[in-house]
Length: 382
Image 1: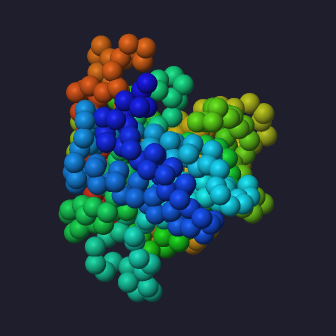
Image 2: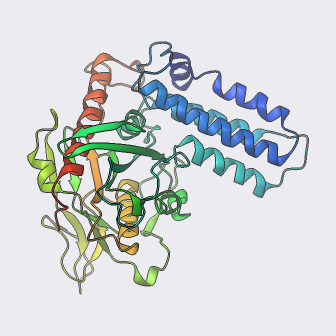
């Protein structure tokens, strides 16, 4: 099947069986915890190394592909869920092991951007934090890749040359699952690092043929099913809901980004939202952004988890008191498309030259966008 073909074609097929053997040798919860953290981190580093040209490439799956990481992680998760250890393991302990596997295999525990000290901002290389996502809508086409996840693998730990000097990039990937976001996975991963970076951007896949810098993010979940086929239609659940705003705004330098030549795809400053105006009950589209007192129904990036990660990250920025000093927001990439003649998942192949070229071009353009954004004179204000 497709997942096995991707794992075989990338050299990742042995990962889960080796993990299962390691679990079988574990004699205690502590030993199992060490194994899970070590092997989760090793999977992330293996995926990053492969994407960045280190080590053997194996098979027909190109190095830039994010899917081997996704399917290997799922295979390891299955092994961990079905493992029957020789010692007593409570359900809470098993869940803790699963959480450790998630965090380590997504790069969330591998963010190597040291905290800045007071007065250090502006010294040394710029520091950038970027996030991507897993593939999603796999029920529609199990071959799907997510260019934001591929970007995270390609850029993690790299240094980008910019007009304002070098910029060090660290990345992580997040699941396409409502429950993880409600449990605070975004804030837990980003909170320790935002005060020490010069710029952050969350990245996800958006519209066909274009990039969008999302000006406004909304506090609403629209209910589209996630990777567990779960729907949620509600206000975005956050800590301290009494102080929760309906909208947050980007502080990325959107004017500089959209004016620059960054690649073959056009880049738009997307100001449109959907709101329920104050005093009304009907949702309306506002091309120029929300009106005072309105209730969010869609941010510029919609009302799925891409909008939610942007909302959570920018709300965290604001609650940390960084609104006026830290450029940050969300970038939507073009949809990653298969080549002509390879669009039917029932008859198509798992990869093709146009598919690979599209992904490489998207990754390169995100890199160029980051270079423009981190070297811009200052964040634009919405």
